[in-house]
Amino acid sequence: MLCCPNGVKNRSDSVITTVCLNPSVDHTVEVEHLETGALNRVISGRYDAGGKGLNVAVSSSALGLDAECVGFMYRESARLFEKRLLKSATAYDFIWCEGRARTNLKIFDRSRGEVTEINEPGIGVQEADLQKMTELVVHRAAHADFLVLSGSMPPNCPWDYYRTLISRVEGLGCRCILDADGERLKLGIEAKPFLIKPNRYELELLTGRELHGIAEIACAAREVQEQGVEVVAVSMGAEGALIVCGDECLYAKALSVPVRSTVGAGDSMVAGLAAGFLMEADLETAFRMGVAAAGAKCMAEGSDTFSRADYKALIKQVEIQNMEA
Image 1 (cartoon, one colour):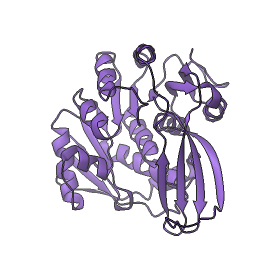
Image 2: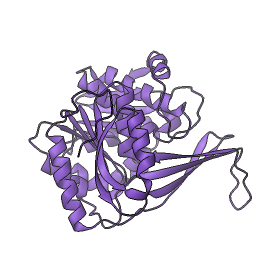
Image 3: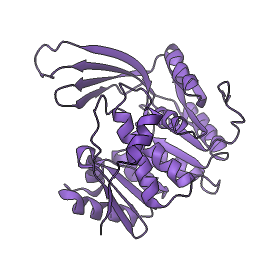
């Protein structure tokens, strides 16, 4: 049953529907300088409701879009997730499961501005659960402009499940965005999603080779585009980001911002890109929105939603250049 937070009008037709198959409780701790094999003292810590699909939905809401999150949810952990979704005025619809959501440990190294992640696999799902999820996704996709499939899958979930979902919603009028890795991404591409957003390492896995420099990354993105993906956006951390669509290839330098956490930055980029395409903006404008949203998320602590003021300020600072792939 779709839950619509107070103050949110008719949510029967959401602009963006995100799928979160493997939600997580993100336990973020901050240390001054991470030393492996040694004692590390925590400066601060927090617990947040997480999962890439949930992050995209909340970020979309922060950009003023009507968004909803569908996925599996575990009764012992539900309160934390519902609190975050309600706070952001994001609608949701879950397939309920017993037990608790997995915990992902995020260690933020203040001296390096880096996050080390240690993620649990989650609770395995059954075939009946997957059938219910497929029906739910198809039902919600019929009322959405974008369907975002992102993140890991729980144990027992077929590697090609994202491909299955993309194929099942074909003809419903929504455009699919896929943000996954490894076999999940490779198989999902076979169903020709509208947009994919790999990071550099995920693109290397996809193409089977190391990529040295922006030119090689652009060429690899073009190769994937030729498989039937309309837009390929590549996030590269400190090296910036790149996007290819049609004959266009754009590159953006990384924004200079105080980094408090990189968790969810890629998810915010997806939300910004989707917002741009929904506005029917040109590629440069949509790309600028995605880069600004990712930068603003890096300025927020833990899994906190980015500040709309930070996002608006960063929009003006994004430097984009045209390049040939």
